[in-house]
Length: 133
Image: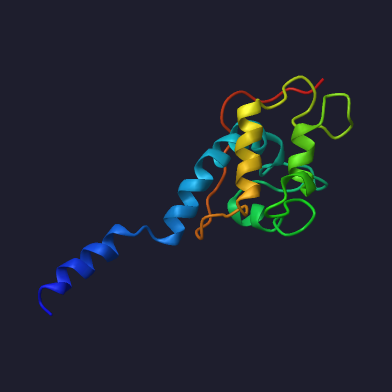
């Protein structure tokens, strides 16, 4: 029995906690949100805008029509970032659509269940303030 204990402990330590897995999977999504969304949907947003200022606020959008886990194309959040500029409601506003790589990151995240870390993460705007035309 003494010989098995180190093996069992080693195996237990090698497994990532679920929260670490969700946090790791969310990291690229966080970058996309902080670069493209949080400037306008953060702490200083208009009351009519959905909040994306932390993962707790983001979690309230999951399971509704905003973010439908497993169904990016049915998620309003995903739809607006794929609209062409001439469609009202395209996000980010006209003149600076997110890259295809960023769209794919969001698609993959929603497709895989839109998992968020268990602990709340504050999202902070990164980079220059997006402009709208």
